Image 1 (tube, rainbow, N blue to C red):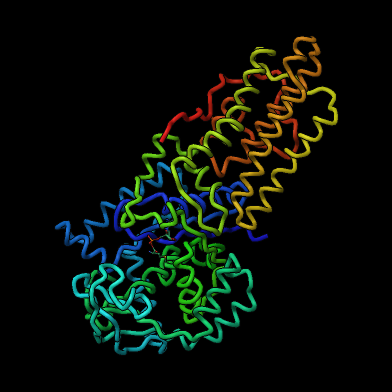
Image 2: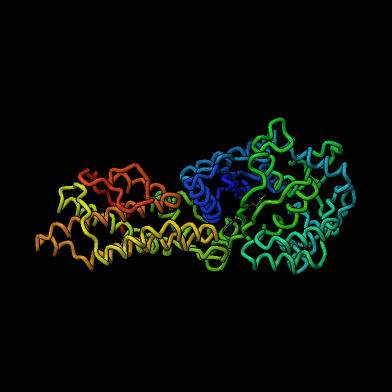
Length: 506
Ligand code: ME8
């Protein structure tokens, strides 16, 4: 079996503080990376920032700082946010890193030398106040999509990348690799809306601003957007550098997770770039939906912005991670509201998971002085619960393989639900009263063991919670190939509430 796994998020524009929507992609990628590591894969998880372009240049000018100073501050802040969210990336790439700039220059030159990039004229619409170029299709009612003002026809010397030359090869590839774009609805959209009508060559350089990677053989030009941005996935691994060990080991990527609006660039421009460079294509591009508030994408310009760290501080990192991983059916859009975050935390985390662990450890203290009891003879009710706990890793795995993280989490919470029901059915307080010690031991043992199985399954998704359960159970080993691995006679640690019920009216 191929035991390496290369997973990436998009590289983010550092054009302001990040919002909960950016956290969505990153937390999903982190959970998958952690899961694959737990399955013994050698994982390489890449994230980073996409730092060039006219927008960044203008923002820096507005602030009276250099573009580099401007992005440095945001990148430092971003890294803090990822730390607060428990993101375990292996590398953080910045497109202003020297090695990336050099690789982009080499790629651009290579494509130029082999005739895939050529010099031409860019004709487009220009908005003077915004200093932005737009294509016809980006305009809104023929006006600038940013400020709504008139735009003017301009002509500028530019380099173009011959997408058209590779159209047929791309179509054939998509036909023969149905797993390449997921969900499949996005694949159909790409083929029918963008590829079939005919690919136009792509403008890949600009002369009207200079905050970008300079074209080595024509210094007026800087590389424009996608060749710079997409190359990050291979420059991060040392492609075309003196040391390409990581590239040889990890390329092609196993999974690029991207938002739906950039699926097009990752499934048309990126595969064509790789074909032109004679490199294998990534195994899968998954296009997820957006987190929306009242139907609008969360963003500063939409006015529905709050710093994700406020939620982390108020509700805990795992409450935020859980919400992001569980709430939105993967692939679709999902609504983000603080009410929904609170409802998820109170419902699944406090009432089901937290309550079960707390009750179980509390009963062990009450009836057995905190010492793990023996597991005696099992009956039908026990076996039904144990069978589910033993099946859980397979259910989680098959859902992760489909990238259906909400379903994987639902299956884990279901174990805790079943345990709460098991308590109602077995009524340990009655067993205690009737002094049926043998049965009481078994019931409490099974509940403790289920808490362990649940904690192991939760680990990639809610690492802090999982660790806390392990600590309370006084265990470090994760052997779950058998059910009854807890050591009878061992003392538990003090019970600690995992999630407090949030009583807050918004
Ligand atoms: O597109 N909900 O950067 P970006 C869910 N630099 N996802 C969201 C979101 C929301 N409300 N808002 C943003 C770029 N995202 C390029 C990528 S890759 C070679 C270059 C997601 O900062 C968005 O869908 O605008 C995208 O996947 C990611 O954040 C980065 O967006």
